[in-house]
Length: 344
Image (tube, rainbow, N blue to C red):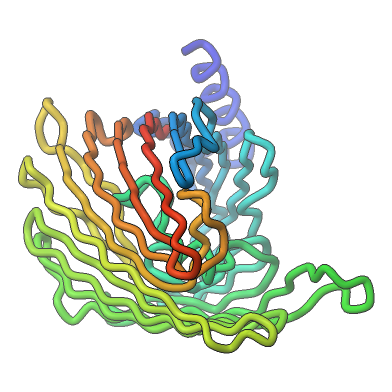
């Protein structure tokens, strides 16, 4: 508490010095936020601490507790046109987000420069703190590159359409090539969008380092029920016959609706003091990165069931069980995972 207070006072003092005539406002609602005139500063993060037990052919490969994510970030705005974000993972992964953004053209055209997520995949672009199943599907893990250095043009049109197109560089494991340059693009539309119902459709494509993928997205929300699916067709080097899909559905037992904004889903916010309870199930099949059930990159199928308790809008407990089969060599694998999640 003392550290938070000192940090808030320090940030407020800096902003006051920069803009002495403006009123300074400090908020600790879900992190630290300080505003002063044309300036805004935010500090926050997330802690995800897991227990997981994974087996392959009845042989235990993993069994223990670990820090899945320990992220801290700082972001801010300078006037109406400029913003930034820096995010680091304390578990050893290092820098994640590190970018500048220009928004002077309005919501329909923003430019982001730096280390950022490629615009590919509904599940990938939905934050890890907001996904319903504790770990992303094997399909997403294989085809969505994640973050890379690049420049992206993106925006929101008519309130229910989004687009993004970017040019990125990626390190190559070849001394003669060094870095490869590629691009990624995504378009989404929500023909139905109300407080309690959504229909989402999307297309995405990326091509970098002889590695390309085309993805199709579909999702819907109706009150407490939500469903989403993605299909990806990909190429990796000389292997041009890769594909996979997943279908995921959930139901919020306490009646809340899963939020949706700007082409992605957000975390369930409980409406009562007892929190929100959600059941979720997912089926996935095809070429993917099935490492969670100890298969690695192969053609496999898996089924996951889970239960989430959103005790507070910033606190979540989740339990998942996944069982799968390798379609190539008949291996069997499963994983039991429990997560405590705190965002601030």
